[in-house]
Image (tube, rainbow, N blue to C red; front, top):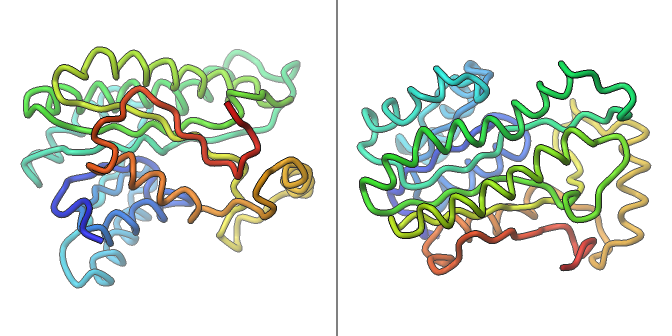
Length: 254
């Protein structure tokens, strides 16, 4: 506890799914968390819940379309006006549709690239000038372990996340001299924790098949990613940059 006392952390896609776990853990570690989500009402409600649970004003909601150049350009100034600094960015927003390659038209390709890769570029572009000026910062870009192994019917998603890893390494090189660390977190197949968003039969079949090949013989849950995310956000990883930390129960090894 307290590894991120008073650090200001932006989490995209923070009001839903794994983002909620990230935000909750960050508040528990003493951070002030900016909950960004395209669902502005959901972000406000979740931030209120976090503040009530913490007994303090630790979370601030922002409705944000991470694919919008205009909205992301205003992100840093909005956070600076509220908190005076931007210490950490967690680029968590994304989606992973399962579509056969033959059925991916150009519009569908662009939508997935926009949400999973362009969004990382836009949010990094928003905060990096602030981090460079203040001489410190950390960025965690969420990728996927599928970049190491590939998977049928997810070509656009895996292509986007491969781009995220390339961007991570390039930014780590470019901004390291300014005190900014940039790393990527690559989750495996996470079983949803929300009862209203169960796995489809095909999804359930996939995670059961994956389980057979994992070294850790249980399903992966959102909580399994929290420790790695906190590590990359905090001073515990202050000499680590340009790396990809894969958290998938030993499914992939490299």
